[in-house]
Image (cartoon, rainbow, N blue to C red; front, side):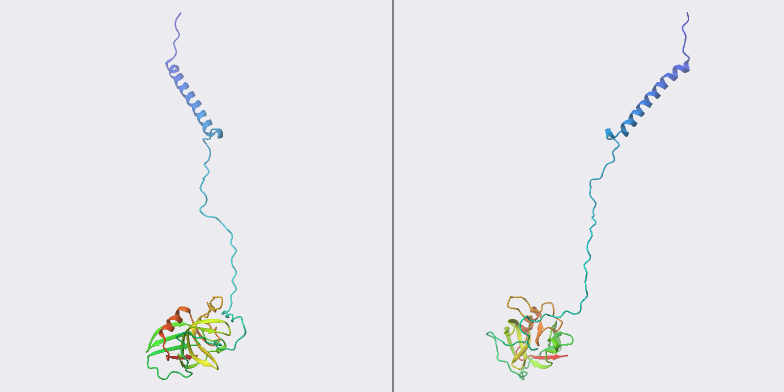
Length: 230
């Protein structure tokens, strides 16, 4: 009995078919593994960082325009439009002279402009200081040519119980003296009229800021001319 032989082409196809079958099985297994949620290969990563900003709702503040503020008067009795009721001086107090000093021979001069609410301080023809100031309400500050009559480190206004640092008296209105001084200090230590410089606030005096009044007090001499104009 003769042995049957396999054709050469068929002998070659068997291994190729086996290899293709194995590749197909491996491909199906790999696809199943990567698409299965249970194995966790196809889970989309969730970012853990937070947004670099946040949205908030803010209520826009309302603003009502107002005119130039009117300073609050001293909360005692209503005084006449003059500066103070009484001056209590310290060791440097000098008796005032009602008229401008006739013997002053220096070159210093103080100009107060009511319309500008400003003070100009001269040495000769040179402006050495230029400051915002405040004069009397309702034109209470007198215009004219005066002079520094007295210097008091801190003058006391008995009618309203206030202290007026760096007092330079310049003229009398009746028995009351008007002058140049710093923002007044109330009995509780608060500063009166703070924030209102540049508008008429006083009852006749010329008011400067605390620092400016100290500079002027140290600079001025008895007899220095003071001119007040509108």
